[in-house]
Length: 407
Ligand code: ADP
Ligand code: ASP
Ligand code: MG
Image (cartoon, protein in one colour):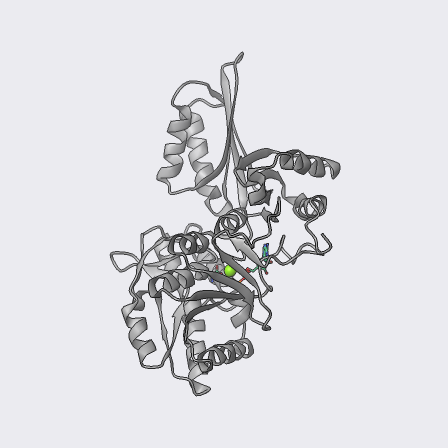
C-alpha cells in the first residue's frame, strides 16, 4: 500500500464531466489499496476570470483582497470533486488551505509555504476518507488568506506530499509529460522519460509552466519524486527525481520560452559607485524579483546603462520606481518594453561541453532574430528577444539541436 498525492490541473477539472473523470481515476487508485490525497486547481479559465474581475473593480486592487477573490476558484473545484466522489460511493472531504494549516509568508500573490500540518489529513486517511485539498492557497501568521502564484497548486501538492512523506506526487495535466519543448507550439517534440530536479528546475524557471518552479524546489529539498502525466489516459509520463545513471545524458534536454517578462532600461545614469545598489534596493523593497541584469558603462562619457527584466505582473510597479529613481539619480531616460520573450536552452550536458551558446546564437541569427540580452548559468543559456518571434525561435532551436523524435 502506498500513499499517493495526486494533483489535477485546471483543464482536468474544467467541467463536471471532467471532474467525474478525475473522480473515477481517484477511486481506481483507492481501490488498488492506496491512500490518496487529491489537490485540485480551479476550473480552467477561472483564475483568469477572477483576476480580471478584481482588476475591473479598481485600477490597483488591494493585494490582500485579490488573494481572497482568487482563492475561491479552488474552493469551488475541491468541493465539487468531493461531492462527486461521495456520490460515486467513496467517502471524501474537501479542505481549504487554512483548514489544514498550510502556513505561508505574507507575500500576497506569490506567498511561500512555510509549513503544512499533516495531522488532520492523516486522521481522515485512517478513517478511510479521500482527502481533497484546494490548491494554490494558504494562510499567513495573522490569518490572512494568501495565494502561491500562478501554477501554485503544483506546489501545494508537493508540500503536502513532503509533509505526509508520500511515496509519490502525481501531477495530472493536459499533456503526457515533460517534453523537449512545449508540445502545443512545436511539432515533433519528444517526451523525456526521466529528468533530474536540477534540469526540471531550470526548465520551470525558464518558462516551462508544466510545473511551478517552487514545486520542483520543494520536491528536490524533500526528496519527493514527481510523476507528470496526462489525466486523460494511463500512459507513463515523466519522472522528476535525483540525477541518476539511467538518465539520458543529452547535451541539451529542452527549449523553453517565457512571454511573461518585461524589460526596463535606465539609460545614461552618471556612472558612480552605489548606483546599482540604490536602484536594486528600491526594487527589492517593493518585493519585485529581478531576472536578468545588464549594466554597461561608457568610460569616455562617464555614463552607465542599466537594463533588467522582471515579470509582466511587476512591470507597473517597477516602471514607477525606475522613473522616480531616474529623476533622483539624474539619468537621461527610461526605456520600457513589454513585448519581449525569453528563450532558453537547458541541459546538464552543458556543464562539460562548449559550443551550445554559439550554436544557439547562430540558429537565431539564421532567422533574423535579434538578441537583446543574454544570460547563462551552468546548465542553461537564455536570450531576450522580441515576443513576436517566440514560436519561430523555439522551433528553430528545437530543430538546430536535433531534439525531436527522430534523434
Ligand atoms: P495545469 O492546468 O494542468 O496545471 P498548465 O497549463 O499549468 O496545466 O501546464 C501544462 C502546459 O504546460 C501544457 O499544456 C504545455 O502547453 C505547457 N508546457 C510548456 N513547456 C512544456 C514542456 N516542456 N513539456 C510539457 N508541457 C509544457
Ligand atoms: N488556479 C491557479 C492558476 O491558474 C493555480 C493553479 O492552477 O495551479 O494559476
Ligand atoms: Mg499548472
